[in-house]
Image (cartoon, rainbow, N blue to C red; front, side, top):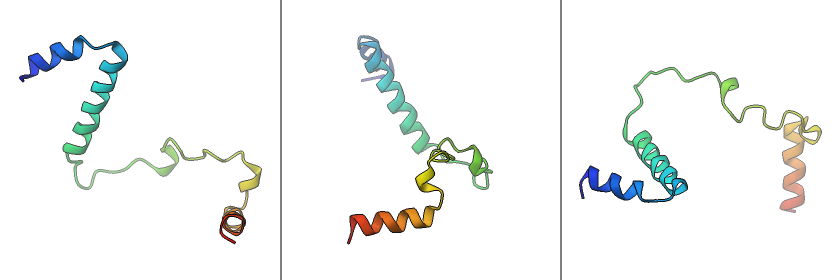
Length: 75
């Protein structure tokens, strides 16, 4: 199968399945293309999950939260 045949098959899929194919191609590309060494990483504050639980009052003291969680789950 060549690229044109593959694209013809993809184009016959429903749109949501086409998006899955394109997402998978982007995933494979990201794993294949090496990141330049020494490339600066964005600051941690700019990561999408940073601050996810900032409004949770039960996690104000992270160390205590984890200790209590461990006590409950693994007595």
